[in-house]
Image (cartoon, rainbow, N blue to C red; front, side, top):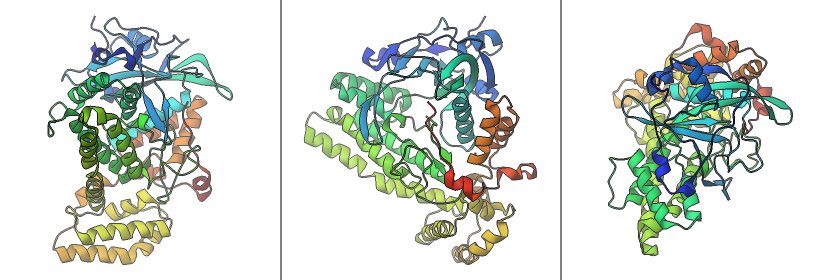
Length: 480
């Protein structure tokens, strides 16, 4: 019988300080609640033996062809350095599909590890359902992201303020390497391990990238470009990650760790949802500044392996990071002029983008619906009100197309302006019902989000924003 996964463990070739071998803690009466058929096809896994699959995804069985481990890393959390590690996640291994594409397969909420500190290593059912929903939504919005293969509910108690239903999520990524992994090596003051880590990261994630003769500079460049492109994509759809710590910044440029994240409704660049982000550090508008800050922390870790002369190393790293602002502005405006139907950046259409966002902010317009209305005139109860507010801007917009003697690229707008996002009020309603045993609403929301760019009259409620009271009081929390 063919095994479920085709595992390798290349990460275990790194020095042992980067991981601890540990097995998941077994759970009682596991049940697969969600199984991602789309991802099964991508991974080419053998899911025919449902008993074996359940045993592996619940952590109750370790496949013969792997050796589970938890990763060690550090990170800057809200700007403060701390030593961390996978406190409730265990890597089963690296699965190779039929195309020899490599994916990390990780169980989240599967019990204690050496990095759990005072935690129980468990996760609540609601938090894992939420991660499944948000990660799949980002995937279908065409944004690089971790994905969720399954949610397994179990009957082993999870103690929080109350006794919660427990669950294990199977998270899939190209790699769980993160800036925090390098911060950990730098903290250990082990330049040899740092060099091995950099070479491994390049070989695994960017094997064909050799623009610079110094490997560490190649890595810094690729991670910077990947993260700029990722954060621009978040802002394209109104996504706030909510906890952009360096340990949540992947070298692969994938979104992951969906604790206090959410999508904005009313456009306000200062929007923060996280209950613990008191200063607005990770607000919508601050995301580009934070990713730049994180990249500086990454560059600091690479200094010892960029050049043996400290001054030269700093100079080379700084020259690389000096490119950030221009790269960001280019990516940002390229994305946002696409949202209003232009293909090439000009001074005038950049100004048009800025003016539109200013109008949206001053008039409390819904972020998604404003661009949706411009894209394909989808009507909802406030559409006429929006058109009245936007009338003068729309006249300038149409005049600019005439001035350039070009036609609005409607296909480009459709591609960049979703009809549906995970509206926070609908997500919360679906999750609350799911915890009570009713998955119908959750599955309905998930179904809508699998086709976010295609309007359907049956899904009109997914377009309508929540009432102002919800908007003013909504908070998100870390899913621990």
